[in-house]
Length: 208
Image (cartoon, rainbow, N blue to C red; front, side, top):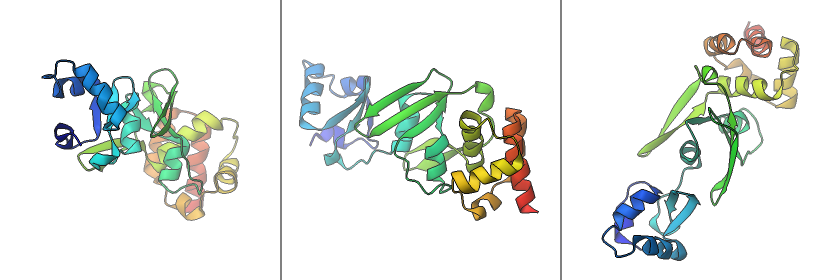
């Protein structure tokens, strides 16, 4: 175990940070190669590393999703599963970002990024705090709106949206009842799409 690495509070390290930590070595690059071989550090992608298991600094996949490619926020299937809206366990973390689509297959899982307009970031993005860090993730309402935007533009009525929620996504009706109407209304204005309006209408009718 490296004492210099053990002193770090977070498990994530940039390449430049590591070079700085070992700047007094004759060949810092050789030292980093040795650390990687021994498992003291794990390469996530070019320029980004994590501490090895021996340091007991667990890597948060959600925090890592924000770090890998961004600015971005977690949404779509992973966010729906994280919030408990859908019963399936989703392993691939899908995020939305301004940049072109990209995917990373890392030692900590697969991270997929899809492009969305800056104008559609808007309301419904939450910051979840973790120890010494945090991450951005879509709220339940925003995750559903994003999912409909990307995957189900063919829905043509509030009845179809409700069938999709309850039968296809298998969202529990109590979760539908708990959706925030103010946030859904704001998302209607943000997206200006019939599909999102149908979602708002469907939830409004169930709540009456």
